[in-house]
Image 1 (cartoon, rainbow, N blue to C red):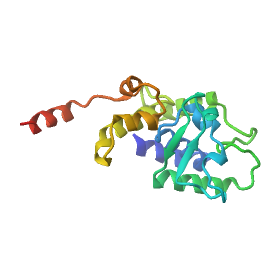
Image 2 (image 1 turned 120 degrees about the horizontal axis):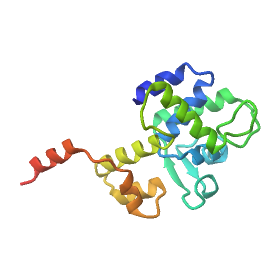
Image 3 (image 1 turned 180 degrees about the vertical axis):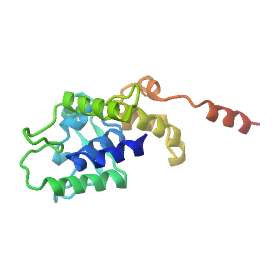
Image 4 (image 1 turned 90 degrees about the vertical axis):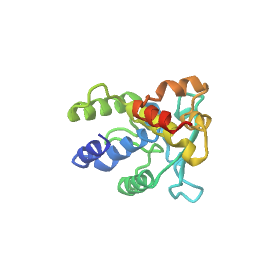
Length: 181
């Protein structure tokens, strides 16, 4: 599904921007986070794209500012998009032709249209975030971390909130059972 979405976005009018929005959601950002993301949150002191996003409280739910570490694909998409965008004076990363920023609602609508076009049932602007949290929870021990690290990266105050995002995997449960004893 991820590859199908990325392929579909290649043929859109604002392909780099749209791909970037999709990748941001796959890094756990909410629609409001994507819409409120500012250039200063993704660049270092010299104005170069950083290796992490310093998501401030004002760009999130007001209390869930956090550091979002970027993988190579997201960082490259951000570099390409900002180069294409050129000298647009907006402080926001995601801009439109008529406005200095997307609204959170416009981000939600963007994802609704994308997923409807692709025929994905039940998908929303939050699907990338859910996917990221589930994948992070499954791999965090390989990185030497714990579910608490996933909680911090997701910007959740309570671990119970993080747990609600994580999908079960019956096959993994079977494999685990065969590994014990």
